[in-house]
Image (cartoon, rainbow, N blue to C red; front, top):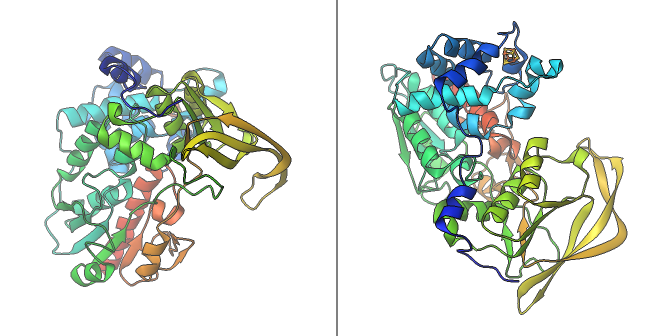
Length: 446
Ligand code: SF4
């Protein structure tokens, strides 16, 4: 067993990381699907979208070939509507709520239609929003991810000048650095950031981290308000023996490197264990397999009924050939010469329902071992606790405490997205950014 890079040919990498949900091949194909929509009154698809996109309206606009209007309808509610059409777990949101599900027919492919309109707008560089005359007000945003960009776009439309401080060298946040490359490419993420900021009045200062290149006090002194949207950090530690061995990696770092260094540069083991069953765990497992790992096993301490990922994501992992071991928790990682050789797991059973509403996993006393040369940790992410403490921001275990959805304990400082909720979907972060912008506008116009 060995951890190696460059396992595949250029053609194989291209094939393995090509778009998992290809767009409509023709306008007619999009029309056929759009015309199936029943344009429901009180549409459940719209209600299940965290950004409340008017789904029947944008689909109706497609049927009348008003693609510009359709894109505007989507972007009015969700400025990252193009990216969300690729990464949203639609099976548990809009498409999962489509009335066709109750008629035992395939739901309307809402995401694919949304992609059709928004990508057409991006390709044609249609500028669908006007920025109002400058008000002279200035807002600083920390983080150029979905919450920060969404907040910035709303504020800029209202004539407020926005400066975003981003610690990375590119914008997009989780979209750019933390999602499987076969769902959304780095090139698309860059195009999306450029499309959003093309409205003007948004300046992004890259390689500027809060607490390093800039402090919260400096931002409070220089701007009328501050919006914190810096997301969450690295994967939670397993706190088991052997975690320091060569071959144990953090899922977020693994995906980050894959997206920033190119596929052939990324080393992957022959036999990989991935700990966790959230979206990041699935993304890490499927990408390890697509990089050329021979065996990939997902380890989860509960059962399929409690898993945090969607059934669709689980199906992708299974189709990619990943194995799943339910009711198992890592106990120890064994190594030789400093390198991983085995993972020892506890066999678990489910006990009482815990405070989170799920049955707690309890060790049965039995164990088993897997021969592996790589362990990827994807058991949740940790908020930036020391950063928020250092900046005197009230928090609970690193998650920023807010009132009325978005106000922090500090005057003129607002927060939203993953740094508040600990990590949700991209579409939730977009809505948080809209809520933040609304609160900031109320605050600076008082
Ligand atoms: Fe169309 Fe389905 Fe939404 Fe009804 S629920 S408006 S059929 S997409």
